Structure formats: C-alpha cells, structure tokens
Length: 382
Image (cartoon, rainbow, N blue to C red; front, side, top):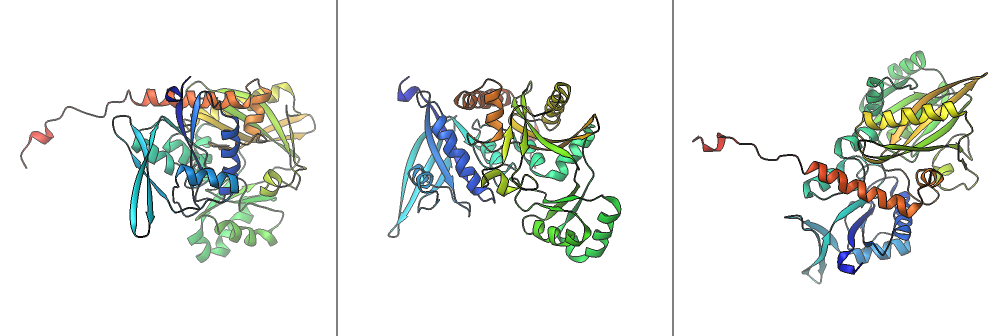
C-alpha cells in the first residue's frame, strides 16, 4: 500500500478534562499499536484550556507528556475533503498551512469536552467519520443521572441513587442530608455526575463524612450523584464492540489496590489486579454479557463501550447490579477494554482496525439520511 492509499486518521487526545493525562496514555498506546502499513497518523493534541495544536506540536507533546505550543488549528470541510488549517502567529504575522485530507477521526478523549458529545457534535457538523458513540449517546453515558434513568426505563438492575445540584446543595444542605439519610443505606458512593476515571469520587461509610464527600464532588460538576454501595460484591466489567448488532467480550474482575477502584487504583498503584475471566459461574457471566449488550443498545451505542457491574454473592445466590457504561474507556495496553478483547481473540491492533471499520460503517449509514425536503415555503413572498 502506497502512502497515498493509506487511510489518514486524526488521533485527538488531551482535552479540557480531569482525565487529560489518561487520554495521553490511551492515545500513545493506539499510535504505537496501529498498523502503519494501513494508516497514516495525524496526532492532534488539545490543551487543558481547549486549544487544538498542530500535528508537529502534538508529536512533541506525546514525547514530552506536556501539551504546549503556539499554533492553533481550524477545520476546513467541503465535498468530503476534511482538512485542518494550522495557524501560526509570530512577530505580528499570521501564517497558514494546510494538513492534507483526513479520512476518519479517533477521538481518544475521556470525560467532559471529549466523551460527552461536545467533540462528537463538532465532528458531525464537519461530516467526517469518527470512532465511537454519537452525540446523544455520548451525552447520556457521561451524565450518570440520565444514564441511570435510561437504564431504569429498560428495567436493568441498579442500586438506589439520588441526584442533587450544586446550587441547591449550597442553599438546602440540611434538607438534602436528611433526604439522603432517610432514603439510602450506607455505605454510599458520592460522585460528580459528569466525569470518569473515578475523579472526585468518595466512598462514605457513615453520615459524618457525607457532607465532605458532596463538597468534593461539587468541585468537579454542577450535578452530584449519591449511590448506595453494595456490600460483599466484586466489580466486573464487560467490553462491547459493534454498532446495531454488538458483540460482548469475556468478562473481567477488578481487584483494586485500595478499598475501591479509585483513580489511584486505576492508574498509579500497580498492585491493582485485573482477573480475566472473572471468578463467577458461567451462568452469571452470560447474564452479565446479556445485560451489557442491552445497556449498550438502550442508549443507542456504537463502536465501543465498557460496561461495569457489581456482582454480590450471599450464600449461594448471586445478584447483578449494573453500575455504568463508558463510551470511550481507557485504551492503554493495560486497560480492561482491550485486555478483555485480547482474551476474547482480538489483539490490540486488530481491535483498532475493527473500530475504524465500525466508524466508516456508521458514517455510511448516516449519509443515507435526506437533508432536503421539497417545499414551497421559499417560493412564497413575505
């Protein structure tokens, strides 16, 4: 395959999120593993304040671990010719240079301003294929409250939860604390509603620590979700791959280094263990896979997702609780999503390949939509 025949893929990474550094790791792993005979890589870094950088500055960022530079990037799109324009401003002069056409985008962005539908909306406007879920699905999955309400509509098993807003918390603190203590049972997990990678999450064992945990979550989002914890439960995860007819992987078990699977356990403490396959009976594995697929379809997922569960064992009885779905899960070689597919027979580079195929498949389906409608409205004189 010649250089001209290669698929030109833009890899978005970084972003305005508490998961900025996680995105770095995911993008680096994808760029390292992707088939260079088939794809030409255009890395596009996004700073913490939202500036998009040139591919040259993005390459430097991946090498150094710091996104910084003077260039800025703008999009040019028309007739299927998707290009990036690099804008350099030096010594009072503005210079423009154009990157060649991009064929597809892999937005390896985790958390707000990347996994929440915002970037997906931009890519829809540009009309370029991209890996992963669409605008509405991304938004639903990022907002844990809306996600749980959608799961509730599909009769999927969940724990109890209460959602509050930062503004009402500041004015009705005692009323909210009473409501939580009357309606939920400890231990509780207090989380920012729109965030991932366990940023801002705390486990609360009793009422004494509840107020502090809510204050911490409120630093990261205007909506805070308080969920009942599950005693004597293990955390298991299932990867989903596909569009309208998705497949599920084997399931894996997380044994966190700390008390629960927090940011430290996920990315820093090496003593966290991922056990694949999970240590549960075959019938429970099948039930988890079935619920994972149903959760994916309930929010109209596409491309990929990792679905997280708690499995509780009391005597010889198992109960499954759906926790959440992640539409752009961590994508390092050590992340659960690719490791589950590796154990299911799809190695890392082939997994990337398949996700890009699914992006093109979804795009081809989308362009079947008509965008014109015969009308006499414009013929009327106003």
